[in-house]
Image 1 (cartoon, rainbow, N blue to C red):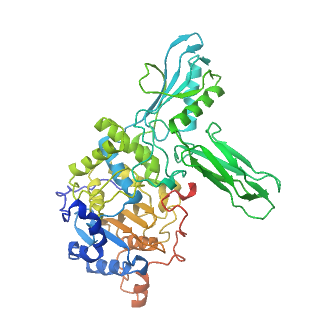
Image 2: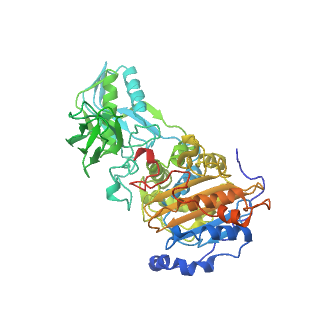
Image 3: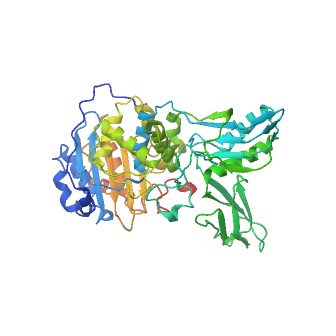
Length: 543
């Protein structure tokens, strides 16, 4: 298991600095291809430079903006750079920044606590008051955890609550969606609403979602539609018909914006497997409260007046609690499967704990303070959320590489390094978003890296160990491409870093060497990537 380097890290290497007035940032971005070469250092590895230059000549990068920096992880020396100071959209690679800041500011042992509290008075087995379900910001609170809390309430002897379940999500401010998030992403599992109280119904912690399953009946009948958990406050319009066996399926499950109303359409073939979708729910705190009310009923506790919203100012007494796993454990699914909601909860939690306010602005300010304190304050760039779902976010490859370099000397580095997806490893919680990428190459089970993609954006930042044992840091950000995905180029760069020079043994022919430095076409790529309808989603299996 990789750990901290044994040698003392020298003072943080200088970053390339180029001051730009903020008003000129957009113009500068459009001129990067022609102007940024002045920032590229003289190559220290001529063979690597030639090889990466060859890969970056790929036609799929024509007219795209590409920024790269590769460092020797032990010394911080720049071994390759192209437009390292370009301000580019990080997408989900921003989660490396958020997770590193969370480990540093909150600590690897940090936990979230969800409480059940009581108002009013207790008379035997009756609570003459309300049960308050107080959210502690836990991004991993599961339906089963709420069932456990309901069991604790029942074990206390309460069988009747004359009031309500009050859902308290007031730990975080009430803005549910991040700045610059696309409105047409709202129904999808990778764009959950963020609240201090939320519930997940999936082992990968897809918070604020309901699983909608469409099951065919006999041909000519209406298909059955079920919700899990059943307490999800969804209504339906339309229907899904059952078609003849072998007729194919075209199931549509769409949530109307701003409402918990699902529009059903299309058909599903008789005898075919059910079709499952994960859909976000409006008002995640009340949703969690309803799930908790259902759990109470299963444990024999009756709530007379249903579910309401807490103000956060109720006078109450503690009754039961649930603690999350440690932050060191939570960053594994966050980074492996690129869980956006978890990143946003960490951002707001940092703001709440370190800045006194559980909102994006305060959390981001604390994250930026962490970067500045570690010598990565400039160039400023722009960050507005924690997951990278916003297109307002901007960062340079140099800053990304600098973060990866400095992380090695932090006490939490081994935990963080292991939480990054591992190229080519088929285990979902090891390989993560890279499980099907770079298989059968020297990068397999070698490269630890975070991917990040959305429409026109594909990025990869992480570590590769060269054949001579050197660890290399790399940050490759590709923006503004149109047409064929450049993902094979990204992977070819990582493979080159892990493999070393082509024809290293001196036996490869010129033709073989040329072929080895050509990124595969989409049809040759081993990750099976053919694009998705919602390219912002890294957890493709849930979109």
